[in-house]
Structures are given as structure tokens and as C-alpha cells.
Image (cartoon, rainbow, N blue to C red; front, side, top):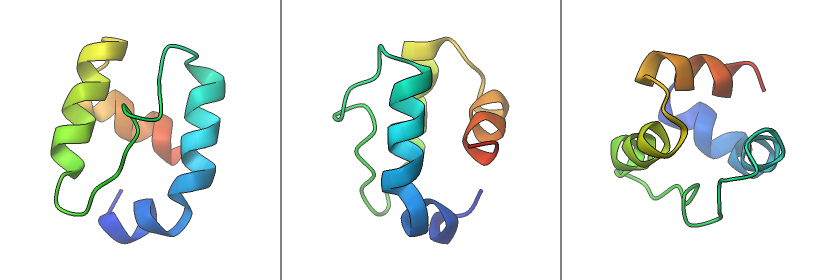
Length: 61
């Protein structure tokens, strides 16, 4: 997953993630340029997933 992929359809992916994991909020999924790793770290902690698992989840959306 590269930054271009995330930016290109992030709103769509964000909606799907919120459907799949109701615990997530807009703040959890705020994608700010240059802060991708920070956002992924928050998601890892909140969902109890590894970075690789998150990449697979996002890629499968």
C-alpha cells in the first residue's frame, strides 16, 4: 500500500473500515500527508492487529 493508493480512494476505504470495525472513529482514520505511520500505529493499537494485517485488510477493501 503506497501513499498514492491511500489518498486516491481513502474516503471509500475509510467508510468500509468503519463498517467492518465499528469501534473506529473519523479521528482514528484521519489521513494526513506524512503521518501515515502514525495513523497505522493508532489503528494497530485500537484493533490489536499487526502492521501487515492492517495492510492486508486495507488492500482487500
